Length: 547
Ligand SMILES: *[C@@H]1O[C@H](CO)[C@@H](O)[C@H](O)[C@H]1NC(C)=O
Ligand SMILES: *[C@@H]1O[C@H](CO)[C@@H](O)[C@H](O)[C@H]1NC(C)=O
Ligand SMILES: *[C@@H]1O[C@H](CO)[C@@H](O)[C@H](O)[C@H]1NC(C)=O
Ligand SMILES: *[C@@H]1O[C@H](CO)[C@@H](O)[C@H](O)[C@H]1NC(C)=O
Ligand SMILES: *[C@@H]1O[C@H](CO)[C@@H](O)[C@H](O)[C@H]1NC(C)=O
Ligand SMILES: *[C@@H]1O[C@H](CO)[C@@H](O)[C@H](O)[C@H]1NC(C)=O
Ligand SMILES: *[C@@H]1O[C@H](CO)[C@@H](O)[C@H](O)[C@H]1NC(C)=O
Ligand SMILES: *[C@@H]1O[C@H](CO)[C@@H](O)[C@H](O)[C@H]1NC(C)=O
Image 1 (cartoon, rainbow, N blue to C red):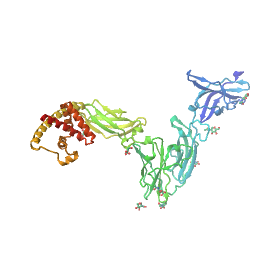
Image 2 (tube, rainbow, N blue to C red):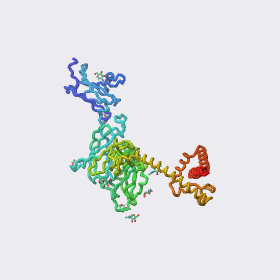
Image 3 (cartoon, rainbow, N blue to C red):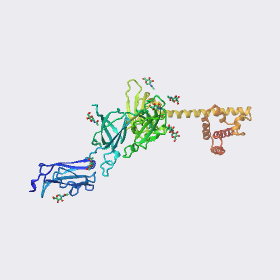
Image 4 (tube, helix red, strand yellow):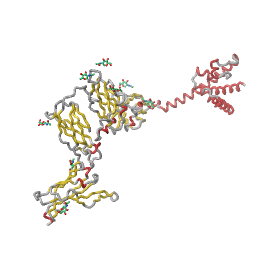
């Protein structure tokens, strides 16, 4: 008579944190002598065979011989990342129904987040909310750790019909902006943002605020402004008396731990007893993690409460400044060299973000259409431009990961060159001009030398340099051209003379030249001495010629 009992229907599994409940229906619920039993098997992947394998069916502890339509089988579950099959049957004495259809589930994926614990306290017009995580102090955990949770509260004024408000909460909170002697109610739920899981709400808790304490008002409207990882905290100036302020910081991570870290707030250096309503808090921020800041006002012995805390996620709140750029043009292209934002302040934004660069460029004419180019390199070329045209451009850095656009640089305008002004032709022109002036200069010097020598030999047989020059270079040296050239001709000419000497003298002269050059180097004289010795060779050469 096995077939007289029908199988259970609508088998389902509910999981809240690590509480596992199996539920089902059965068609004749009034039959009290019927019991139910469930079995399960664990599934695992055999990677070599690329198949899912199953263990044998096992009796599910907590779900044997139960007389109701549900059972708690939490103790049977150990591995929340594996998958399971479950099935149930009805039993009456020796008689057993066929097994129900098999239900497949993976605990971690199916589990729901339970409600968090909420504790409220009302003092001096302020409501303190302390939250404990859904699995606080439990040894079995579905969720890897308490710090993966974020919390959201829905709260409302009990006596009014005002819309409930929603607010993100930390583990510990102080809500200041509440009316005195008013009842507020709230419920809280936990989230795991990365898993897109939203937990169930806690029960509703209500609390009545007291009168506000008659003390100095705490600072309000804290804001953080950040450019290139320099962080400025500002707040409103509410005070008509002389007030000083102190800023404190807490690492965000501590805020999410179950322990009370309210003693771990530290005063930000340079932000203690300040009299202005802003402070640079950069010294207390590194780019990893989040930070909380709070401010307190003091006037004589009167102190305010700490302000509401502001949460700062550096990489998100930071604005990226403009990059530095150098632009040069050719006939049909612009060459752009960038320096990442912040580099000049030793905080290159490329250390913090994976930066790309966006260039907007346009012809500087009334009907110009703007073009966009995106680049990851710091040096790049915009090509296919029209020669002899003014182009303007501006550049911003951006982080695709943070979906963050930096500030644009100021626009820079530059004219493209005409075809024959291209860098290559400019270089060629330069070489030709150098060559021509070289020939001309050598010709002039030879002529002048010839003439001056003739004159010298005729009228001033023992000419010497003026005494000051003599002092500098040592006496007894023959008169040489570089003294003249330093005052009357560009020094490059000295080099030109040397090269001509080498070209036009024979082997022995070159040897002598090298020798004299060596001497001048050994004696550690001025570099000009090299030129002096060149001139010496020249002079010797001319003497030879005269002979
Ligand atoms: C369930 O009932 C059967 C038969 O009535 C019995 O053999 C078995 O031990 C019971 N199991 C439990 C866990 O009570
Ligand atoms: C889980 O089960 C335990 C014991 O039955 C119970 O005390 C607890 O409230 C349950 N937790 C949730 C989140 O349902
Ligand atoms: C909230 O308001 C309702 C009706 O206005 C009242 O019955 C209830 O007692 C109030 N709850 C608290 C905690 O004050
Ligand atoms: C505030 O401080 C300044 C300078 O310290 C002082 O001159 C002024 O009297 C003070 N004002 C009040 C209201 O205490
Ligand atoms: C700030 O003021 C407090 C109280 O007046 C004092 O104890 C502390 O030393 C001051 N700190 C600085 C850095 O001036
Ligand atoms: C402190 O606060 C009280 C109450 O607001 C006020 O009467 C007193 O003048 C304040 N003292 C100082 C030094 O600001
Ligand atoms: C950047 O660092 C260099 C070397 O460490 C230092 O000399 C320079 O002053 C720094 N510049 C700024 C703006 O901090
Ligand atoms: C760009 O065009 C504007 C108006 O068309 C003109 O005033 C400005 O001088 C131009 N800039 C350059 C660099 O040519």
